[in-house]
View 1: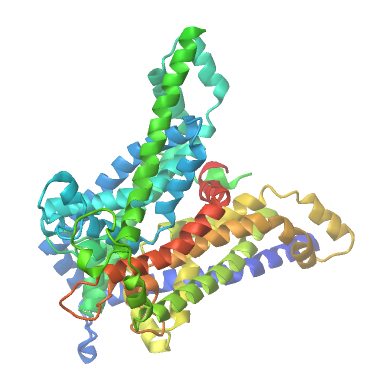
View 2: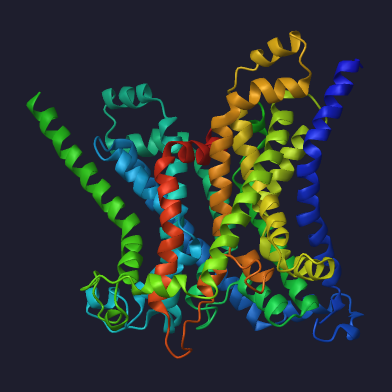
Length: 291
Length: 280
């Protein structure tokens, strides 16, 4: 091996070291620590009573109604928002792609929800749907306390998530749309394919890789939903998500043992979703690292 | 000829109408919060979209609040410092990954990807406990550290995508002229890489500015509490009255700068958001 390549390796490792250290210290180490804590009965209010309990914390989390309800709620919010976002995002991307005038206006407007703090977006929608301050009830001629009932609360939460994150989806899909060769579409048109056929037979299949990446990231993001629920219902009316359950156990009740078991279970769910997408739909990340 | 012209203008109309719908959908909640912030306290429950009388009283309340001004300062400092450090570290990594041959290249990109998918809620308990024992709880550094970590994947991917398009031969020329790799990096590549670095910085800043979970978990006072946490826990002067107007004004104060930033640099932001996902 030449001296040059040894020096090159050394430089490379030196350059990567700080970032890798940060990533290890703030994610890998705490994750291992969470795994360790989850095996103890450990309540910060009674630190002296800490003792090893094996898998008992997992048994009590998995045996509780709260966890399964929260998991169901989280999956509902995830599925609800991601599916609508995909459809809306595709529609928005098409508008941006096809609009002759106003393309810039649309793109600009779409970046506003992306840039806004999630807490602010959640507040705005909460006030909008509020029966006394809001304009939604007045607009629809209703007198409804949307966030005081379970299903309407889900509606408000999911629609807030959709508003906040559809732009991200739309911009990614627009980038995918521009990759579809115009010649191919023109040729199909000459061969007599109508707009709908062209979209489903050519555009959609060619966009599939971009779409899957966007879907994967949005699904994982939606599964971690916390800010919107915290601001709008704080988990009341049976809208608790797994992140809220974890936060409450760890920070509100200071129960590190039980809370850590919830943390580990959330981590397992996220890994499962990622594996499902990568194996199930065949997203190939390694391809994109090659030049 | 006639027919295709007619169809064209119909199509124009369709996509034009679509544009208007999209713009309205994106902007209504922003217009709403601005309008709420300009209403007088007495008008807050009038259920009208626009204020009948424009008043700035809510802004006065917000800036005389004991929590909001420090939170604003914390947010700006913490997001600014996190951006600076995260982008610097990510530049090193992106350069190494794009330009240097070394074992572990793929591992680093895979690790970045894994962290992008990592659920932050899984580590708030351990971090809360750790930070309290090492004195990082309720400090700027205590928030900056997790922000750097969770911003790194985004920054690395965006920068790597940009760095791949740089004409690296210039660097070789500098090396031939006797510059060390580090000099070549600093003098030749950094100026060329500036647009990518700038894009990554905006995205990281938006991320750090937006965070809520770490902000409410790892802080407890004006020492380090950031704006999203302050807004969520706004109590107002009386505990029986919901401080809707003040919350709205505070929201507008923190939203306007970001919107201006986003509008000024929209091309870069779009390029950055899509860099990782589309081109390899």
